Image 1 (cartoon, helix red, strand yellow):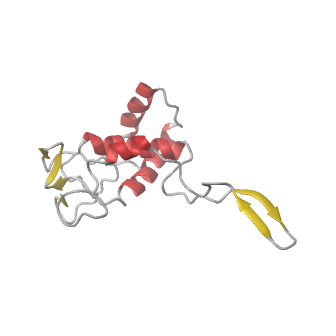
Image 2 (cartoon, rainbow, N blue to C red):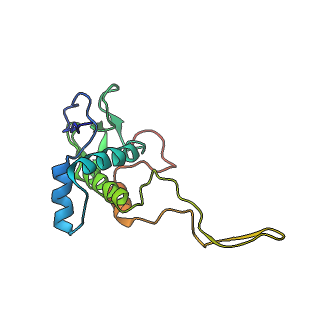
Image 3 (tube, rainbow, N blue to C red):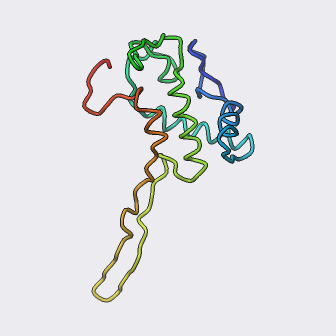
Length: 157
């Protein structure tokens, strides 16, 4: 499936906020490695599945738009984000989600518990401490912190 990029104008059938070229430019600037273009596009779509599952500040600009952005009533650092803007923070969050997926830490992939030891007689199993949990990703958290709604928040941000 080809990427259709949302640019703030409510693009029909949009499925991403970033293109493969956008990601490559971002990754190259940071010295990250990445797969070939067809795989990058698939990875972007998978990352978008995660990003679109989040609860963002503000309200969707139009009820029927294909993606969560553009949005109304959004303020970042005290400044209003126009309803035809896709904030840089959102694009960085998508880039970070793509990188996590490439690194094998996708937020959508289940994680298994890692067994350290087993015993058959009287059945005993020991799991690795902290196994079954996703790696903490400060870069993703930092990118999202200004644009997602806190779990305690109700209504507009």
